[in-house]
Length: 296
Image (tube, rainbow, N blue to C red; front, side, top):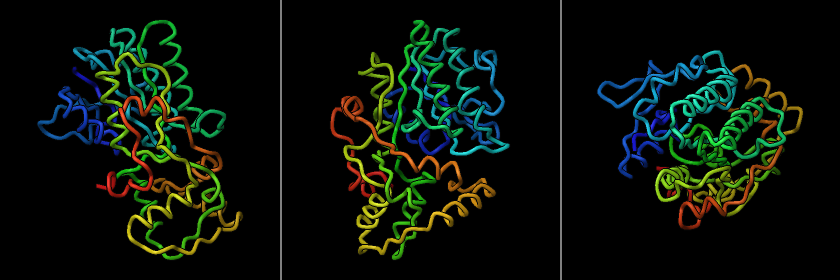
């Protein structure tokens, strides 16, 4: 199929593009105009500004399916979170309905139900709109909600690996208590390939999670063990210092640590991997094997 993949130069998007290409699809990579590569099959688009369906209709000519892999962790002037997570995806979904591109695979996130963060509310709004279009019969969508996605090239993955190398780890309290189900970026890409192939009839929300939940602190301890290091000394950062460090992170848009991240860490990010594993045709990669299989 001819597939429009938004966010094709991002961490998840690059892996998805490679997997779809290996599966025989023609991938039209949606990228920011300033990131275009000469000769590549790329389509310029701007998720900060392309907030109308009319902007997307010309880009859907000849397209059979759309995969939306665009996302940001925090708000910025260059990539406003309301536009990137809600207004532009909604415009893209409406354009798909108008153009007759019925198959849409949208990457959302676990842990957004009940959360009041801007990350969660904007993600949830796009999911709700897409589900409404599905109920109207206008689209045939699959909404993927992954837990923590781990792999080479991911900013959060690099942060976890750097923390895992420290002999003395000082963690905010939520990292020692909130649970996650880390998932390999390659497994996430494999599920998308299945949704555009043998499982193309699957629709609705798919929770994408590893086979076992653990706290973030235990996950980083596992990464340390996988790297061949001994057990680290783990200390809890006092809550006032945790709050202060997050507020300092608010002033540095390029880092993943901020008050929004701290709030999101306060709740579990877990799900039922049954449908995800059906798509894969096997168990998802266990967190204890992620360094060997996904950090490459």
